[in-house]
Length: 273
Image 1 (cartoon, helix red, strand yellow):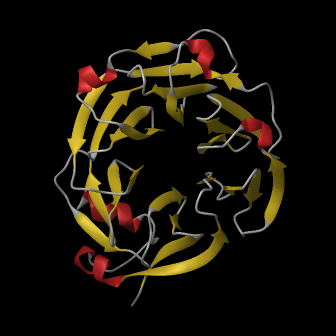
Image 2 (cartoon, helix red, strand yellow):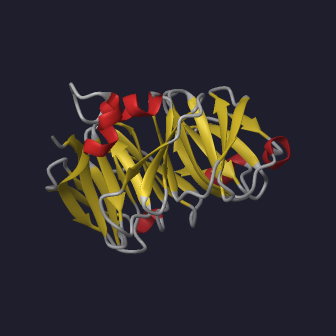
């Protein structure tokens, strides 16, 4: 039931019975963006889409119009882009072990943060924190989780022996949602921490490609569907994907953004009478 209510959030008020909802859902395409196989992307809460295009970072508004373009040669190869707020975003280069903060015009705000200054052997993933100007960093080599200050101060939190504490495999992604941090490993395990770095729970699922969280539910991308699993319930619902070849999903407002081999596809869910 909870999973169905999550889906209703995307299709606005309805009068149908809940049992009819999944049969009546239809994907409506709202736009697309080109992306290279080796490029990375992100979308913020306003629907602005950020895409690396070789050695250039591009920002498109919610209607698909290119607003800003910035050379990122000096940043190294960008692995991740994340929105801090509507005015700032952070890029992460595993190659250079650096995090750079940009403003809403893609201009570098200050000197990039050198992660090696924090005794990090190899930062592999980062996640923006809800705490002001803070960034979670996974040090895969030393099995550490750190919460760093983006303003370059030496004040930070650190959890050592991460793999030993939670028995986790290689970490493939991290994200903070509503002051909870979620780590995903290569064996489809999801580990949840609170904002102080204390372990809350672990979850294990059948294989999935990508994961996002909405209103207390995991939305897991599988080969041909979105699997909706409420964090604290046994509900298990599926929505068929709008097209084949999807390998990544993100969410902004009521819009889903799907990545295929060379496109980012923007879709919304509607109810078909």
